[in-house]
Length: 219
Image 1: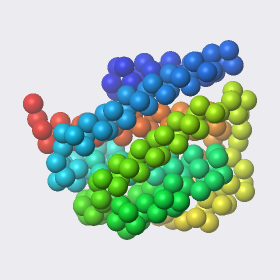
Image 2 (image 1 turned 180 degrees about the vertical axis):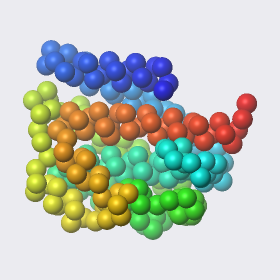
Image 3 (image 1 turned 135 degrees about the vertical axis):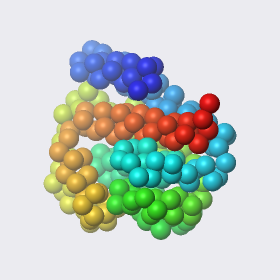
């Protein structure tokens, strides 16, 4: 893991444990997220469209077995779902902004159900400019959510009502590779969701993207 990102993530986790340092922890998380989004925007500046669809590790397991386009969709669909449906209880940005149509996406799910060539085919149809607009909207929205959370919010659990509403939206595939996410998220409190997906999940997928880039652009 990138040493700076790892240190910021570790520091954030320690700081949010205590009320007296909680806000410093949130500020540290926002710094981390800013560095990660800068990395994401560097992809758009430095890669051509075909490279967003490249899947050089197609026959292995792990986050790097995807494409960069898919990974970006996946990261921010999860943020959108968790932040809006499970924490804030309002409408997801994808649905509110009609981003599925704008991005030309055949799915509204997290994409966990897709494998190998399905991931490659999915990546090729996405409108990259609209995907980046979606990323920007979700990132800003999640950051605002984080700024407004209090220390007391950390122990708040996801209600069964929210869980059932999430199921009704059909934004998580019923495929066995995806449906477990609902129990996973809903088994966490807000503190757990801050740590995953709002920090560590981003790091892991971006590092996987960098591994893909290093494979298609060897030094």
